[in-house]
Structure formats: C-alpha cells, structure tokens
Length: 234
Image (cartoon, rainbow, N blue to C red):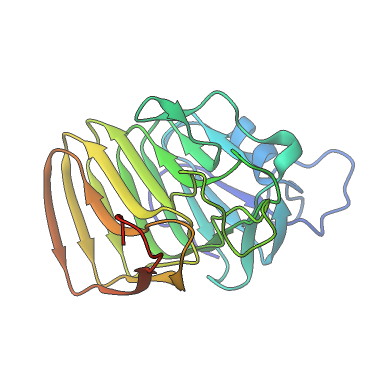
C-alpha cells in the first residue's frame, strides 16, 4: 500500500501475532485502536483485510484506508461501546467517533446489535470525508425483528462546524437515518446508494437529513424506505 498524503504511514493487520508491534508494514498493529493511539495528526493508517471487532475513537486528524471496501470490516462491539458520544443531545453509540478531521476510504463499518439503545455508525464533530465506504446493519434486533422501534440507528452523523464530503458510499439496512447532518459547514453528498429495510410497520426511516448548513446532494440512489403501519403516521 502507498501513503496518500504527507505524514507517517501506520499499518494494521488483525492477523499480526508479534508481541511488540511498531506499526510498520512488517510489524503491524493488530487492532485499529492501537494504531490510532500511536498515530499523530496527519498520519495514514493502512488497514489490511479482516474483521476488526472494536469501536474506534479518534482525536487526531487521520486517514483510515482499508485494503478493500468489502474486505476490511470494523464490526460493532457492544461490550466496549462508546457511551459518552452524543448527537443532537442524545447518546449516539458510534462505531467510529472522531473529534478531529477524518478521512475514511475503502472499508466497511457494520452492526448490528441485539441490545436496545446501542448503535450508530460514524459520528464526526469536525471535517469528514468518506469515499468507497459501506455502512451497514446499523440497527437493533432486540425485539426479535430486523429492526426495533427505538429512535437510534443512524449510519453517518456530523455535528458542529465541519465540512462533509461523502462520495461513492453505500449506506444500507440502517434503523433510522442514513445520513444526518447537523453541521454549519458545507456538505457534498454525491453518488451514494442508500437502501432502507423495505416495507415495515416498526419505524419511519429517512435517507438524508440536513438540519443546518449548506448541502449539495446529487446523483444518489435512495430506496426501500416505507413505513406502512395502519396509523396516523403512515
């Protein structure tokens, strides 16, 4: 793999078995969290294919670049979930949470959870750039169905004043909102595929929510969101 910008390049491979990794290509870290803890602002973290059962918190400007979109999976871990991060005044439980500028490329962020009040995809409070990223199964099955009625399960959330660029991404099988923007910055949402869970009587879903700021939204495909319960909300 080749670094995409100035800054150190740090490698992660969950097949690594070395006792004292240094983050080099030949001696990589075994977890993304360990690489993030060792990184400085501007570094690039190269993630080799594998499933990483961890939630990631980032406070330096970093790039997380996967070996392949389908091959690198950051999988929600309920026991170590982030219970401090909030969005729009409520707990968000993000799998990836960043308070600094963040670039995500060529990887998958995935749920689900079997517990109520327990999951979000990506939450950023600064600039966020995402390209060729899949965010899927951001949902709760605690009621025994594919989703539950709790108003959680947002795929991508941005809050604060950061700029946003989400391009060529897939957000699917989320519970509430695919992309939820509460930032005063400028947002570009282009050429993404957003797919809900289809016809159901459990919860109303939304594709792209813009609460404030300026947004350019073009070339996206949004489908399979239909709340059809026989009540006043249908």
